[in-house]
Image (cartoon, rainbow, N blue to C red; front, side, top):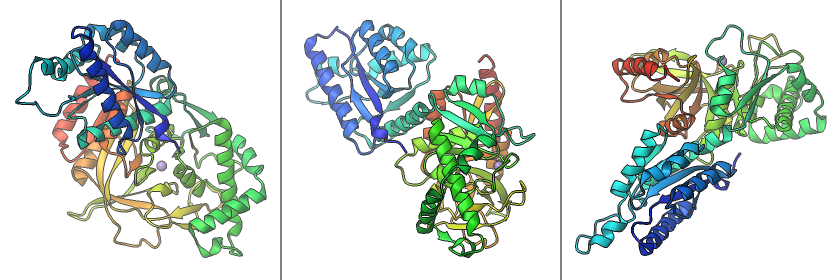
Length: 498
Ligand code: MN
């Protein structure tokens, strides 16, 4: 999907000329060593590039201009090995357009109790140097992530990777194009929103094509290509009898493959990173894209049903953020509940379109009637999803701002076969518990559509929201409704001016 190592985070160390050349030489050496350590760490997925230390307002402004102009640079890490008077940083930070991580570390882990002298004190000043830098970032009201800890500590490295992945997702949105086939599902509120504001705030554009434009591309797909894709289906999935060679619905499998190839061609040709469709507008299409949407998502495209372009974009960003991590990310919908006392849970699914990246085992490729939309039976992949930590994320438009809402959940290994349910499904228990989790979600206005993630944490999404400079609300093991309602009420004031 994307080679994260091609993306760069620049490591920029601040200092000043007060301490003499010898100290600056050491600052530079140490800084190089830290950047190299991060860059070669297997735990950090993005390249961390050392940049010459900065000691004057002119150098700081120049490097910030360079950051903005660089295509590969997706953000910067700053660190003040010594004191770096922060008025020097104002003009640089003022124009900085990329995410900022402020690393509050120290080159020496321990105080050398027997040898500590004033030279050591001159060099190892992060404890107060980083506070001076922190003040100016706060004074400029800039969003950033502050990571505290010794640079070789596992938790420090982990936080840098989380933030870097969020920055990769954010970078991917800049200039991204998403396409809608048809409009939103009629009358639905939460999936709609302000596309102009989204483009301004998030950097991606969403534009519509009539379904006929897509149908034209689908119709032009050759039989040879369709046959090749069907071979891939056969080797990747367990095909239900009626879809196998000489099966009575084999033609429907060909239709589904043709839809997938058409969609792929359309997206590649238009340089789109994701799409949405709606069962209400399928003129000229034989069936609703089921397996096509599932496989396109697995290939890295954003997708959501019913014209839900915000979730399309979120699914795409989360796929970029989770690149290379075990587990997957999928479009999801809270579908139905199990209210058994002390064992309450949610069954998540959609009509068809759950991404195969979260499948546990080999999916079954099957065909069943849809019940809505009045088209031919769509082909879909059916599978269960493993238990473990996961989350649901929802991007909503509150009218005066976007809110990214996250609920941490515990996915439950399915105990039942659900033989009559012909869709991919997930079971989870919302945190902190079913009643609080669901009530909190509803108070916060969370959508029924989400991106379900097995490999991202709420920290990834919190960092991502900070980069987008939007509201972030978390429902986790510590949530209580009294506090959450107050948080929402207070956020209403905090965002009133923006
Ligand atoms: Mn839906």
